[in-house]
Length: 384
Image (cartoon, rainbow, N blue to C red; front, side):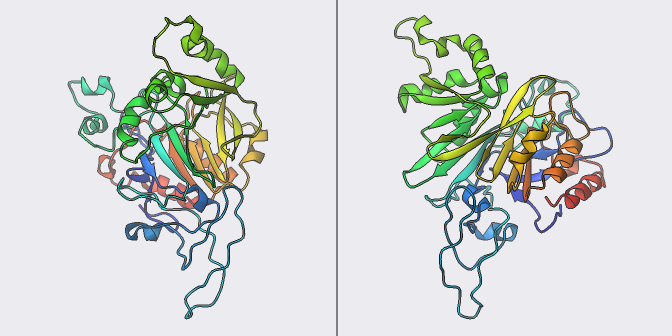
């Protein structure tokens, strides 16, 4: 698939592509796959740092003859550097995006921040039992997803921000849904992850907080506690759904539960390990508030049906937008579909966009010939 200036953008352990058709879509066929695993989506590079790029991925990013470092936040002026003598001394172009590795063995430099896509699927995940037990076996996606290591296997949306500053490296998780532990089993060992320094919650549905109980593996064996950052309304829900974690006095003495430190946040910027986090209030269905988050120039909105006017100001000058796009043909009452997501991309005008939360991923061969043309054109128009 061709887009403006790049062919395929890796997002995790695989490749970010977009699939779609104006014709009826088979069950479980999705629009976009941001395959999780590690996206060496360098947050520092999105802010102005030339990327660390393996040979196989160099065609995906702006090339530069020199490297320099910028602090996390708005891009700083580059330090002085020496270009080859055969070329004029000019500042390097501001890179639009860093590479995304499809190979867990490719490690980013220790001083480089990155995003790891822990999950990019829906609440029920892929594969589905209902598809696997269907005698007609019409769902090719779920049939492939049960194969060991198959990239069609995608669970609840979640990202891990590996943030590096002068103090050290910090792992900040966004959402711990009901499939979080399964995703962690796959990706934490693969990428050498051990600690979870903080968890930020987008909303109080099961696909965002259903895995809080599983954090006991970390607080019992790795670290004494994990800070949780949550909005007031969602914390009230947790008091009911996870009452024994919020108030550990109700449990039997000696019982092992997650040791969580709850921090109630407002819809205003807060700081985690010197990283500024800006909440992005959105609607996730009529009357239900969810939060996206901005980290530097990277914006993450995983569950959205509408964006309030005041939130657009917080999305200005966004380098990378990771946006909810549930279905290829239409929106639902609680999620953007691809057509609406594309409209929002045109309005927000980020430098790069990744769509997440789609029901499944399939190969191009699953679609009728020519079915991709409509969405190719859409992507060219919005410069993705």
